[in-house]
Length: 320
Image (cartoon, rainbow, N blue to C red):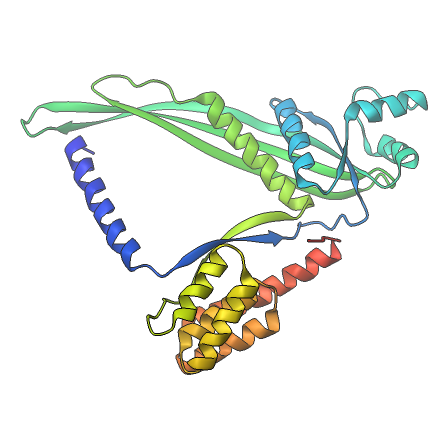
C-alpha cells in the first residue's frame, strides 16, 4: 500500500475509533480463574525432566520458571532427583523414563515429572516486494521481509509414584515478524524474539493444562442512565473489583426502577462475577422478560459455564 494511502486509512480508523469510544458502553477487564485441563489434585511436587530436541533446554528453563509462578507446586530441581537416584544407586543415563520415575516416586512421594520432545524448531525468512506509483507517477518498490517461527513440542506428565502417564499433549505455535522499507532492503526481523515468543506460547499453553490460570474477560455493562445514579456508582465499584458494593448499588437501582432492563442486566453481571450463579441467572432472566435481548441469553449460558468451571476448580483443590 502507498504511504499516503496508508496515512489516510490510519486517520480514518482513528476517527472512527474516537467516535466508537465516545458512544461505547462502559466496560471492565475482570480476572477469572480457569481450571486446569487435567486434575492433579493431591500432587504438590513437580519436576522438569529432559526436554529433548533443538530448543529443548530453552523450553525446560522457561517451564521451570512458569511452574514456580503458578504457586501450585513445589518445583523440584532436576539435580535433586539425580542426587536421590545416585544415593540409592538407581540406574539412569541422562534421562528419566517411566520405570525410573516409579522408583524415584517411592522415595519422594506423590509427585510428577514432565518429560518432552521438540519435534519442530525452525525459522524461515522470506522477502517479497510490491511496486507502486506516487503522485508524480514515479515508480517505487516496497520490500517486505517476513520471518516465521514454528515450534512443536510434545509433553508427558508422569506420576512418579506409579510411573504412569497422567497427561500428554502436543502443542504447536507459530509467530510472525515483519519489516519493510521503500526502495531498499529492510533489516531482518528479530529472529530471536520470534522464536522466544513461540516458545513462551508453547509453555503457556502447557501450563494451562496442569494448573489453574487467570484469564481476563472484558465485561460490558448496560449504559448508565442520568436518572439512575446507582448504575454509574455500581459500574465504578465493579471496575475496581468491589463486586459486593456493585451488587448493592444495582439492587437499589432495580428496587427503584423494577422495569429497567439495563439495571437488571448489570445486577446479573455483578452476581455472575461474584460467583452467585443462581442469583445471576434470575437477574438475566428478569432483564430478558422486560426486553428480549440476545446478550442476556449469552450471559445465562456463560453463567452455566462459569459454574461448571468453579466445580472443576473445587475438584482440583483450588482455594482463593
